[in-house]
Image 1 (cartoon, rainbow, N blue to C red):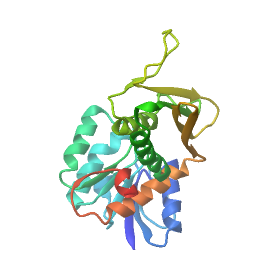
Image 2: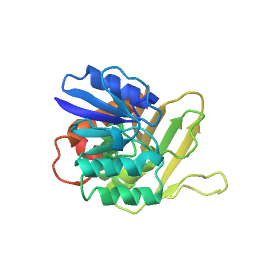
Image 3: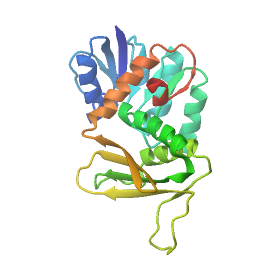
Length: 251
């Protein structure tokens, strides 16, 4: 049985993680951490990492960037691997994460969905196989409340395509102000915002007289919680410090 501590356990995603763990026969939540603690079924909840006394094999964090430093201090002190599913870190915090990964296993990914990371791997392979004869375009769609555009996942897909292509591409986000034919070294990225779309990503390889599309559709945010649990199960088996990502789980 693998024991997990959930940071941010009282939030929406934290509760989903707890439900997924409860349904998993090889995972047990030993404790939760939340700045606004509420009673949770099956495990104690602590108001800070320093107050947590539970034993665990890994920590899953779905909290807030402001909670990062004390959580990492706790994990380093206890020698606990940590899955960072929170987003919005500053450059200074990313540097802190890199330094922490020198002491313990740290898992961080731009997208916690296992399916999206399989998509990333497929895009990399397709770009390498199709080469310069196919134009690459990425279309991403999200709900109306999403603040950033393009999405971090779209940029991750563009980077995957760039790794497979035989040239150094340029990402193009806006064509409306320039009247010219498409350059063969572009990766076009288009963003759609509307309604309650959780997240859709399509990578288009457009060649002469044929088009290949590789897509991923997220039906709910639960896929990100499920991916975080998969990452924690993987990380619980890792003994070597380092910075890990979903690519390691896919492999």
